[in-house]
Image (cartoon, rainbow, N blue to C red; front, side, top):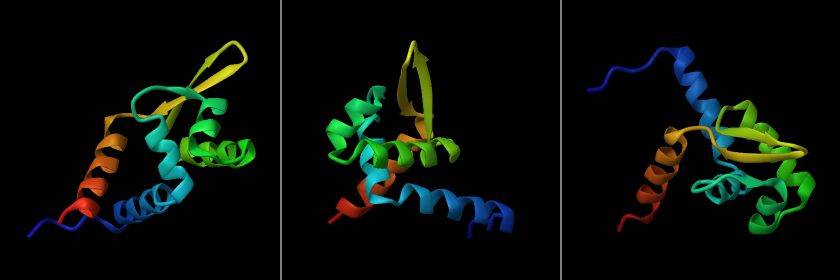
Amino acid sequence: MPLIPNDSIIDEMESLLNIASDFTRLKIMYTISEDEKSVNEIVSEVGASQSLVSHQLKILRKANLVSTRREGTHVFYALADDHVIALLNVVYEHVTEE
């Protein structure tokens, strides 16, 4: 049987999974999973308002799920690291199993 992480780690895991489990945030993460994108590109692909996308990106950044790169006045968003896409892939594989 695997060792259960301490309560502090479990708490952080719960928080991260709660943040990642939002419908719009999941769509945003998939939108930027292969290449970085600007807010306008994300808005167009996700089909949500700019204010909603910006708010969700702020939450994802705070949780270290998304990183940013500034180019002049434009900000580009990408997944923070390979762990995020791995998490998305594991969940996808689990829910699409037969």
